[in-house]
Length: 483
Image (cartoon, rainbow, N blue to C red; front, side):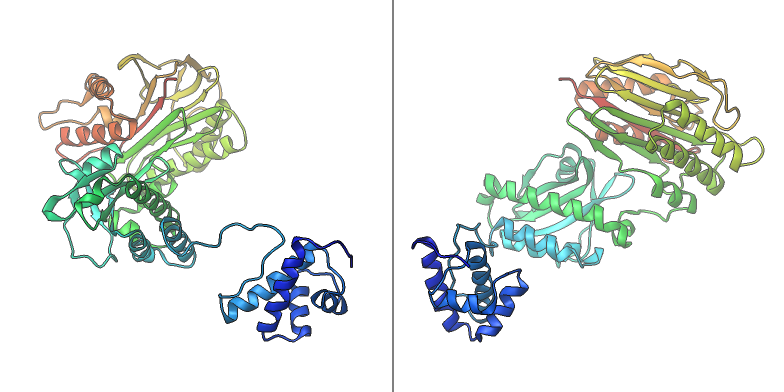
């Protein structure tokens, strides 16, 4: 208990006295609330402070203010006790921050199929009506998730539509199609493209409002993050994104994969697998850090669930070794051991394991019975990385080397499985390495980023073989941004 000259705290004490008269609390009840908040003064000291006989330290005065304000909040918000220092503004009840807070807090205890209704409610706080369109796994259509209360619509094509263009470019675009003014906003979880957010606005004049555009972008980012994080707790998002049922092998492989796109300030990676619903033996993986970028593509022999189990085991072995801090050589040994020790006979997995040191540009890689990665520089394929080739994983566990290559900022690296180049058209002609190199050069010249390049390349491979692949095809593409 202390005494001191009169000052700002005396105004607080006057407020405490006035609030106590309106709080409908006994002195003992007030002291108990104060004590539960962490107060140390005893009942007599609190009474003396309220009567103006002594002055408690400012922290205790603030705790009394909190106790009384909480009580007043229970009764009325009209009377507030001042604190000894300025506090931050209270929780907003309107505007963009209120919308985002409501969505974030409500999502904590909501099942995945409640994301859309919660997003709709948040959108209305911003003055827009929203609908959420997610891309299917083949990245051909945008499909609206249920729960927004709007009339049903057909899926939107990724190619040839304005929403599809938003998905491809990740640029927000306005539209007045059908007499309905709306903003189409990309749904991005980090760099991973999930779909588009449709925000219907009150009038055409709102389409060019830069503040509303920014606020819709915030809402889309939060919705995308919730879709990604909450989707694993239920099936509604996954069910919507499937155009056809998945085989057990495809279910197994897809559950092992990282997000299809990832990025840092200097790197962008994108991957894709086909046939999406029936892939069995292909998989890819990556890991980003400030210092290194790790990449791998694997292709197990055979098809179906057996191949899926083998490639999942190989991916797990490489990932486990990498996360233990072991280098490329040890990662390859780990894959060898798990394939040879788990799958009998002549089972094997081809693949490429690679790791780039960002500071030096040194790329170290192991290529095991697999097509060599392609290096693009200045918009053209300049090299196949065919160094230190070895037999596939699982056949031999010793006696192999790690190859090296020096990359430059601005380079692209393309890892792929033989299902890409060995896709055949009706006359038996392969898609081939030459066609692949030409496609990559055109994409680079057109300025397409890796995610869109991968999507278009996989579509070209599928179209070359009439839409049905006879073998799994995988692509993992990395772009080291020039500075």
